[in-house]
Length: 553
Ligand code: SF4
Image 1 (tube, protein in one colour):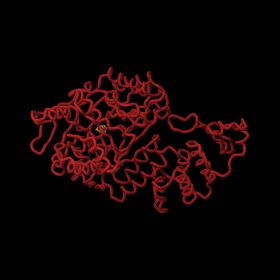
Image 2 (cartoon, helix red, strand yellow; image 1 turned 120 degrees about the horizontal axis):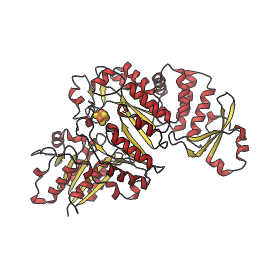
Image 3 (cartoon, protein in one colour; image 1 turned 45 degrees about the vertical axis):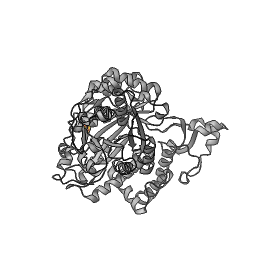
Image 4 (cartoon, protein in one colour; image 1 turned 90 degrees about the horizontal axis):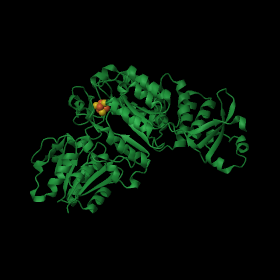
């Protein structure tokens, strides 16, 4: 029996690649008994280690699923793999090769490239491959080889997709984010996005979705990330699924969705407001608040509605909200981007992602990049270097701000300290920028600084650049630190331990182990005793439950 391997090279261990599992399950459904195996790696593994594992699997045909984050490594792997296994067919598929198949065939020793959606193409490729001499790849739709290219395969009916997680071993669920889809395609036309090309929107029937969701719920998996491009583009479909999740909540699993704020209806907002805190994570791409830029990228965005939706979601306090911005978009210069940053930051999301434009092959922005004056990296991730609106140096300043934002805001570890610090700066951007300049001046390395060191740096920054009297700032830092972590060793800047703690515990060792007592300034400016209880954390912020115990001691 000929052996077929599908290889996924993921960006992180916690990621799983639904693409290869779906391809494998569908190919097995169409070719029962075929010997198809999936192998998963991460980009942190060396090419040598990955090659060794593949060679040991001894495939006659191997398929790689290619994305922006793994293509450089896969290029390296295919060259060496072909030298070791010259008779093994190597096929590439995925968004990173679909729009440049000829270029891949010219530069790499691969047999062919599968373009477009993979399931039907791969299943027919397997069929023809297993037929041996009698097989004919010309019957496979959606492939490009050195000799010929076939027309695109038809799009799969969503209900025909097998639910591949059913065959997963239990340990594959642990500590992994599981990706799930209920629709393919997107009705929007954002110029930088590959999903805007695939216009045919298709949905799984709700009955099938419920049955599959029930599987995740019964196994109590930690997180399910919906990969539907705009989950609520059909508001009724979205509402029905959210209702199901609310009614069948297992108290453990959380679900992540990418949504459009302007199509989020009031009935959905109302329903979301009644859900278990932490059940949903919602991601909304704002990208820019400049109407001219939004128009240039063909992005529909009603900022007034977006603000209202964000405000309502935050008022309810039960959803983790993530907003996105993209720097380097056409028509947006540095100053205007700073305004977008401040506008979105002041919506107070739990996380704000400052991303940078990537000019992906096949997108409309790629075709108009020269005319729009967008200069970008010629190798993955094809990130913008400068445009006619924003200089290289300005984008580097934004990069430094993004690092500060990740550490001091998106981590959620400095909530009170940052809120206090913001009072001393005219805008949020000004604060993060000043912090990034301080990091550079001091030569601090982002990756080298430990979590505790980051608190110390923030304190030093405050004392050197903001105010000498850091009494309040210390209080907030201590609060933030203990809100997240039951530290074994007390940091120096926290000063003396509260003497009253011993009275409170009265020798209760278990309570001492599970909690922490700290004396901090209360809202009235007087010192109060606070208990940080780590047995029960806030599902939205991840913080310990904190209570005022002054009267109990
Ligand atoms: S960015 Fe989002 S909304 Fe726009 S085309 Fe892509 S998936 Fe659709």
